Amino acid sequence: MSEQLRTPLKKPIWTLVVLNLADGFLTYWGLLAGAIEEANPLLSGLTPLAIFSVKLLLSACLAAFLFTPLVRLESRVWRYFLLAANFVYAGILSLHVIWIALLYL
Image (cartoon, rainbow, N blue to C red; front, side, top):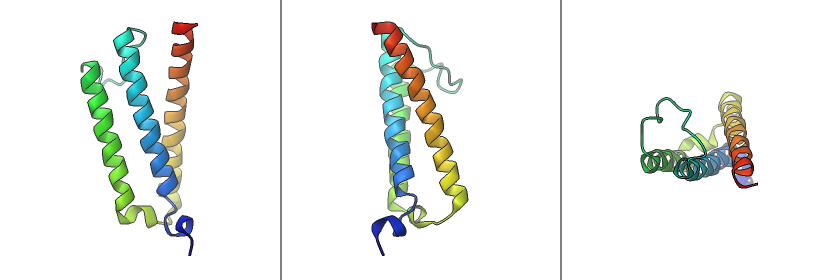
């Protein structure tokens, strides 16, 4: 059996980890540059470094799922949930690209 068949959720989880890290870095950068404000009400009262730390910790927790039996589940519900989360983060990163373009162009 191939690696993909044994771990069907591995790629969506890795993608979410990478997207979350990119979001954390770009949010940190944007907050320091004064180009954006944190829109998440749970994080909006924190400093840029604290927000980046929370997002880094979240990415580490998500990456930890790669070493659990979760990656071997063949559940459509989990797969669709992870794909939806990846699309949300892709949309957020698109917003980051827009403010970067507006700030530096």
